[in-house]
Length: 151
Image (cartoon, rainbow, N blue to C red):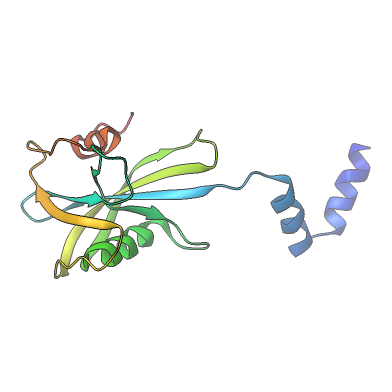
């Protein structure tokens, strides 16, 4: 039986193999977070409208689009949510094990733009010192800012 399956697999090569793999495997959303810093080392935090009351402060986040480079997701999300331009840096966290999501976080550096909230999702955007973060902040984001990427 294994030989027959292997033979069929080689025969259906290309796009048909991808379709079979797509049907046979789990689908995930990729949640992307940016740890955006300015030249002074301050970090950009947003107060998110859709997040739970009392825990609305956090880093810029969003979901990757199909085929989108995750670093470019950070660039797009920050631009959409704040009008600011950033350059993605190193990958600082990759976590799986969630039901339908993987979480990815990149460092990012402010390179320009003008702060203007043009989205329904964001109530406020402010720069904070890593030593003086606001109450009501996502704990996982606090860890990313402090450099603790294991939680």
